[in-house]
Length: 220
Length: 213
Ligand SMILES: Nc1nc2c(ncn2[C@@H]2O[C@H](COP(=O)(O)OP(=O)(O)OP(=O)(O)O)[C@@H](O)[C@H]2O)c(=O)[nH]1
Ligand SMILES: [Mg+2]
Image (cartoon, rainbow over all chains, first blue to last red; front, side):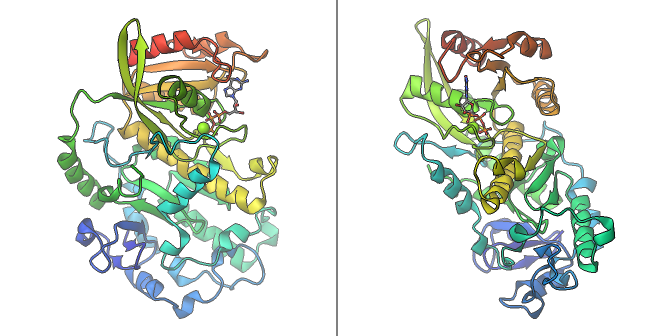
């Protein structure tokens, strides 16, 4: 699956080693798996691509949303050949180290049991939505999750969305997005994964962090 | 994802040497949401360092990122044991924003909390694979211990051969059933406690010193 720099949107084709030393364009070191072909992706990375100006299909079953899933978010079925599911990760005995993925370190002067906002801001520091080059309007969170779509009521659009979800789910077995805000987790898969997932998006994309950078976000 | 696997291996080789063997053991505090992990982590940290680790709440998935406190010196019988404690997000196989609506959380916030909680579970599982040397598994002893989450997590911990202590928490409550917890995990030592009230903390520290020195 291709990757995309979360900072400038630079796309790296599947298997590219370029990103190993950071993004050549902006030096960024966070990348997201990119669903779809590289061509799709490139169309997706310009600032205001024509195809992205319409409401995203992730908007759910609101009749005001566009009629078709946008090409930029439609997974290329060939991508599934490189899905995590079809690529068994190494056993737990694989080499590991303890430094990369440190938890937030609580220094004595920053620890404050009562201060909940510190925690949520720590989260948004990791990946804020404006770090995502093609962030759709917060469509996912406004999607109507209260009304489970019944088969008979399905519009062409919502079945497209459901199909998109199920394709993404097939590629990424460890977390299933049942509906916006509702997740099913496969603990075994999560445990077995190499990459560390740091941010989910409702359209099924997820942000991974390359090990190199795993210390830079943490206060120390 | 061969690309990332390769990258990770090379990073591992570089960073492996940074870690001396006498580093303090890193003890992960694991368990389902609301078991009292953060309450326990705060009590340990307050008892031995004076600081707290993070916010406690009756709302599940309060902890959504792992937090650690380094160099906690626990003194037992004239000896001192140094550990790093990591308070992890509660692990669940399902996260649904609707469960937060009951706690006076607006829908948008509930959906965001749900997503963060899911990311938190991913983080907790990631830590379990790579970054802990021992586990304190915290259970609310007023609830049924035979759950999928408990079985899977304990299974993973056993497969890694990590030292583990089961903490049967909330024994101050009438409905607490310590035996039920002990019977659920007969292979492991169960320590009853109330993290909130501080009950039986002497035994807690004895066992931590014994298992994680
Ligand atoms: N009665 C009683 N309540 C406790 C005890 N320990 C924790 N609690 C309460 O249980 C609730 C959850 O405690 P937390 O420490 O936030 O639980 P947690 O395991 O960290 O939960 P998550 O972060 O959501 O995974 C809070 O309301 C605590 O006050 C205990 O020993 N006795
Ligand atoms: Mg907690």
